[in-house]
Image (tube, rainbow, N blue to C red):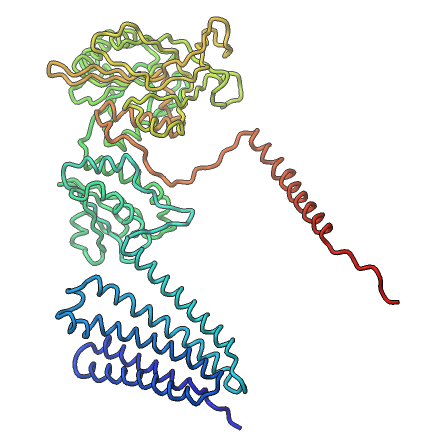
Length: 620
């Protein structure tokens, strides 16, 4: 005996075929007589299938009528989707007197989203119900519970599908992305945003990436976030170098994976790459790279002179015979990244006569030998003309009294120490001279440090005592921008112990001095640091010291408005002290297993107490 075909399956196939014919007529043919004939035939077949199923339902058994009722309801959902489609097309245009997208754009969007959702809610459960019914075709009684489960499963799948597409549509329209991976692209930092916000001329950013490139999407998202700070002057364009070779040659680009910042006739390109694995480092430091190029094209280049010839900190390791002190190559590299031209200034460069007129700032960094009287006179005259001086002192160096007295300061040259708060480096008593502090004022020269609210302490490895001179010279403004911890003392005898007479106090470590502009002269500004090691190699890589150096430069050059944190997603190694390592060892080896055993013991005891006791008695 041959198997009978499924009773309702041919009808459902005819219904789906009618919908498919409508789709071909409307979406593939689109216009002409063929579209009208095919779409009309499809509608007729779909409606005929519904009528046929309705007629056959009347002669079916009770269980089959129940399942057929569910199927007819799903047919109705499909026909409703079809009606909504025609309503947003020809029917709607006739009723509204014009295309729905033009006359009622919101209604057009609603209908365009609603009809595919209804179609999914009709066809997905219909397929599962028919599959379940076909499997029970030979059964004497149709299991309605099995068909009902298939119906609910299909509806659930359709709802999930509709929700997924709706979520993607909303996210696309809102241009929102979420990165849940450990690796992330750096976002625009406060400082970079301030640079863009302060633009006074248009700046063009051109991204050369092929379509659907992951690195290009990450870079594009960064610049889209940045462009909101100045949408009129900051524009972003994405091109494919293979499609736009002429434009790429104009900007000096030969390959994709390149970003070019252009302002007038100045352009700054840098390469990010195309492969995500290789570009991770560049993407994590993207904000730093962009800020460096922004400052190059958006700000005039400034010249900063470092005095030389007096035992100052050098850019390289000291030559034989010089004291073994850390160099300042990292500081100078950081200054160059801020669009600064770093030059030496000594007697050979004319310091004995006067400071060059193009000097934006003069830096005296850790001098160990006295300056010539003529050189000190040139520096004082430079300050008198409204110059900018960055003076970092050394306890073993000169006291610079001729420079500090007009600034209302005095350098005692006595080393500072602290037996409570310090950086442990060599684990010797001398480590108490490695001061650490997070005590900052609200002065613009420490804007970023103040905003971080103690999260970025600054290290001073061998600072000397400095005092304010009272009363201050007329018109002079002073601010102790960085103070030592309150337990710091001036260690006069060098034993790193708070002896009698060595009073504890929050000694000044960094002092900002300003004289208001007058008689056509700009405002004089100076920053005096009690320690040159605070900006030396190794120490300046500490976040607090780096921000101290950057904000000092910006205040001295009058660009404190762009001070702020730079965003970075680089991995930071986790470092533990020896005491912390010991604590983690005992916690992981002993405490954690003991807790697991304790929880298991308690749980087992509770189960034992709740277990039912056997009933007394038995066979007689």
